[in-house]
Image (tube, rainbow, N blue to C red; front, side, top):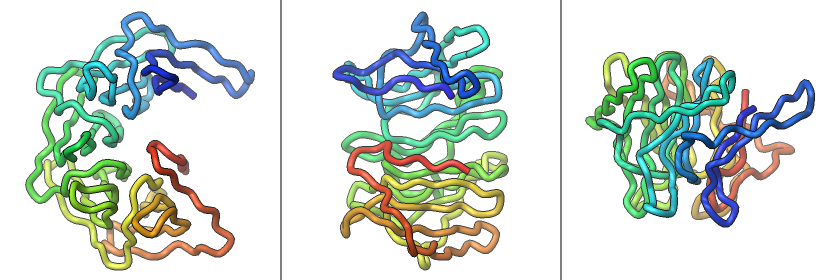
Amino acid sequence: MIIWGGYNGNPLDTGGRYNPSTNTWTATSTTNAPSGRLWHTAVWTDNEMIVWGGNAFSPGDVNTGGRYNPSTDTWMPTSIANAPDARENHTAVWTGSEMIVFGGGYGVTLNTGGRYDPGTDTWVATRTTNGPAGRTQHTAVWTGTEMIVWGGQLDSVFATNTGGRYVPATDAWTATSTMNADATKSHTAVWTGSEMIVWGGYNINGVLNTGGRYNPAADTWTAVSTSNALILGCLTPPCGLALK
């Protein structure tokens, strides 16, 4: 497990690698590491971790990032040419060949994103036509063929039950159904292989112990049982994590 960045009085550019087999930590190098930041994203590519975006306090939100190779304990920067606008509280997924980031922002939410190819160190903007409204504190999962973005906070809505499905092969968006879906932000989401399961978060009614299962093949939502369920939510993302 590799962790990096965050906040401890100041934005951090440090991290660590945890080996569960030996129950030991090893610090990550800071040489050529990105500037310290919080509310950024990170994805694993099979051989490196890519960190991008976030808030560095000075100058604020950034559109910079870095690629960390644990085998060599080295960093190299991500290109900023054609990179998305600086942002925080966005999402990022790994497709197997690209990192796709979407949304986020500070003050004004963004409906833009970008696809980063580490093989060529290049960015391509994601289309906004038919895409979801700008948002923060949302979630995104990768299904194998598309990215599903859901929930979060809009400029004019405290929490939303809207989302979108983005197919990078066609650079096209399709809206997700809202029928039987509850509005939430700062929730968690995982992909099971056939469904996205959303859980927790909060909305105008407070912290939630509800969730839903979204089937993209049928474009339908099914409520998750709340029997014996715990509450998962917080006021400052990132909050609880969910893993499949």
